[in-house]
Length: 220
Figure (tube, helix red, strand yellow):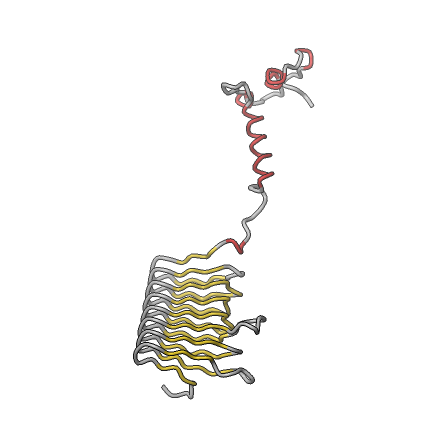
């Protein structure tokens, strides 16, 4: 490898070992700081350190991220790819695709549709949330929501799926794919359920004021 005067000053290379600098070489490449190290070696060391740390050439795993949708009035289509999703603000129209982790909807007046999720958490006021596939856990709090979902605990049949409702004035329509525990508190909720063939009736607990938990017979 040809050595420049910059290399010699840093490594005490004898004068005779120097090669003639290449035509057009930048003088700034041999500029020294107060410690006598050349800028080119400092940059090279930084690149090696970053590569060793995984900063260069490695993406952050998708599972470590949370997709966040905030502000107001947007229309979004998002592929979950196993990630968690958090919708805040107000009046978004969000379509989620793929398999989601935990989907959290808060704020006010969102319309959210999704195929499936490990957990679906609905807070705030006035959301319309529809899950066309299985949800392992559904929790609704706040006021005046509408939610539809199929409830399934997944492969762990020893643990029932859970639906919890609190706050005021929400309507839930759920289809139970297996053993399910439903707990209703607060006031003026309507939780209507159907079940897949072979699924047991839910284990239901109702407290609070003017709440309804019953099988959905198609009437309002």
